[in-house]
Length: 105
Image (cartoon, rainbow, N blue to C red; front, side):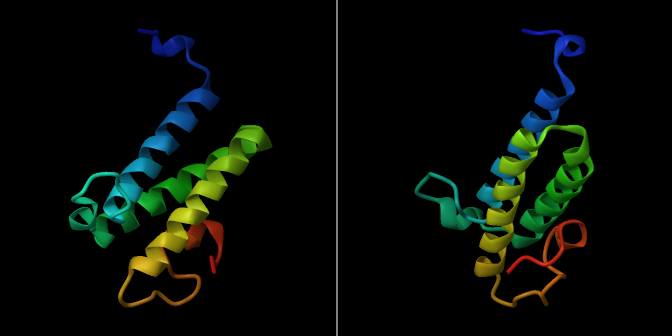
């Protein structure tokens, strides 16, 4: 176990982002288990994706592009998966996290 004071900020940011991404994927019904489709909860997914977008947008200038780029790619994939899973599509620019990332199409 490591003391949190010894963990670099970029590692903490990446860890939190990956946890948010994983939780959002599960809430989008993209989990691995046989019951993945029953895990679908778009309201919860929206909250997680929006939080992730805020974190990535705020952290990107503070971490190198090599760390920010994969996070942005993962976020975009989740935003697109949300749009696909939603029976009533959000207007362009109003989807989860698009306040922070701009429109995702």
